[in-house]
Structure formats: structure tokens, C-alpha cells
Length: 280
Image (cartoon, rainbow, N blue to C red; front, side):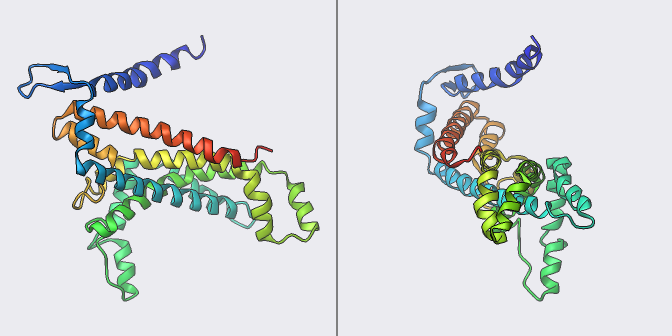
């Protein structure tokens, strides 16, 4: 009874629309708007015959991998550094955690200013170093990496919070015993910290990968899938096909495939990585 209100909201606004989208993926639309009709797997067959779809899939995997690696690596580094008891460490912790409170729209606008090809801070720094400015968001070579960096940056605060909690949960007497035995800092990190932090690290890795596959706001506000479709990831292609090309049933098939892929990837992560997790 206590979870019934939350379950009702989840069913109404998440599960039911998801079910409708799956059903929609098996339908076709009359070009003159006279209704929808059953087509079975025709939308999926058309997807697998579309070379542009496979290019989108490759871009999406590349984008998600960059986001996951950058987010996990920087979050782990930040969490380890924030464990040191130095003057002013509370201020640095607050600065790291502030990214969690920043909305996607605000973060995208800030990154847009930072990476602007003419007045951007980053290009001003490059010019000060006598280096050539770059079109971080306007050239296919840099756009995907730039948006991936913005996406990972926004999630670093939340992941750092989780990893910091995991580090604080490791008993201090284990570190004391290692120091007494003469273990170096690097040995302690690899032999003690990482194994005991592995449950939280595994959880953060799963979240980061899913976040990379479902990032939308940053792409929409920074590049709109460009330039030359260099940042047209899977979820943004769904948006374009549904609300620009008005192919709702085709977009529903794309969404259903993305949903299935995320389930498969999550299962693979649990099957292949969780066995290496040390739960103490």
C-alpha cells in the first residue's frame, strides 16, 4: 500500500507509454493520415536495410564508450583526491558535487560558451599558448568528443558522491595494516582500494554506460546532431524521425531496438563484470 502511489505513477507515465511505443513499432501509417495498420516487422526490416541507421549505431557506441570511460575515470580520481584531509577540502568537495545540481540546459549553454569557435574560453587559451583555435562544436572531427565531454562532466558530481561514499565505507584498519606491512600507495590502491570499491565502481559503470546511450539534451542544445550528422546518436535519430520526418511508427521501432540493446548490454555487464566484484 505504501508503494502503490509511486507504482501507479510509474505505470501511468513510464510503463504504459513504453508498451504503447512497442505496439506502435509494429504498425504502419497511411501517408494521407487516414489511420494506422498492422505491418508486423516491416519497420524493423527497413531499419536493417538502412545504411544510415548502422552509421548511427556506430556513432552511438563510440559516444557512449567515451562518456563512460571519462566519467568513471574522472569520478574515481576526484573521489580518491577528496579523501585527503587538507585545508579547504570541504570547498573542493562542494565544487565537485555542484555539477549534480546543474540542469542539462544550463550545462549545455555553459559548454557552448566555453567551446565557442570565436569567443570561447578554450580557444582563447589555445591562442594564448600560440596554438590554432579549433571548431570544437562545428567540425566533425571534434564535435562528438566535445559533446561527450560535456555529458560526462555533468555526471561526474553524482558518480563522485557514490564513489566517495564507497571509499568512506572501507575500514581504516585495513589501510593501517597495509602500511605496517610496508605497502606503497600504489599497491594499496590496486590491492585494497579498488577491490573493496568494486561494487560501487561496477554500479557507477553501468549507470555511466546507460547515460551515454540515452544522452539527448546536450546533443540537442549544442550540435543538433551535426555537423554532417557527426553527433546524430541513436536517441537523437529517434527524435528526428518522429518529430521532423513524422515517421512515428518507424521511430517507435528504433526506440524498441534501443530499449532491447540496453537490456542486453546491462545483462552482459552483470554476467561478465559482476563476477569480479568483491562484496566483502
